[in-house]
Each structure stands twice: as C-alpha cells, then as structure tokens.
Image (cartoon, rainbow, N blue to C red; front, side, top):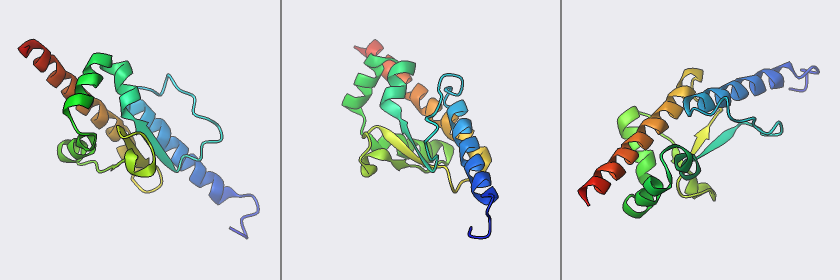
Length: 136
C-alpha cells in the first residue's frame, strides 16, 4: 500500500466490490432502477427484504409474512434451498427482515445468484400468502 503511489491496488479492489454490488442488484431485479451512493464503500450490503418485498409481492403478502413467519426464516430458507448463507441484518442494527451480504469474500459469480435466490424465496412467501388467502 505504501509503495502503490497510484493506488492501483485500491482501485482494483474497489472495482471488484462495485461490480459485485451491481451483480447483486441485477439478481434482485434492481440494477436498472437504482444508482448507489457514490460514497458507498461496497464492503457490506444490506438487502432490506421487507422494503423490497412490499414493492415486489405486495403489502398484504408482507403483512401476512410478518404475522406468520419469523424473520430468520428468510436466511434459513436461502441456505436450505439455494446453498447461500447470509446473516440476518437484525444482528447488525438493521431491519429484522434484512440480510447482510459481504461483498468482499465470495466469488464474483454468486452475487446474482444471491439476488435470484432472494426473489425465489419471496415468490414462495407470496404463494403461501395466496394459498392462505384462498383457504379462508
């Protein structure tokens, strides 16, 4: 670092993590809808699942979800169904229905998989809500 006057190593690392956040956003279906803050360090990311789900599966489905399913279920389902292990954001003073993603230590090709996995879990939650609604 001290010898790298041009900060080439730092720039390369920043390029890697920013590429990963865009891949994650693409997997979530958000890449064309967001412009991340230019000051965002892109070391960790948070997926605010409740916020995202309200826009993608609807308020009523999310209200059902929050009433009938524990917030940790999201992380457990993601691990069980997709082999993706993320931490619940609530342990980091983030919303309970959020996931914490490290952008620094996974292979580049898994970040869009994370987004697609979260979308698949959301579809399952929406299907459970629809089934419960029809059963009433």
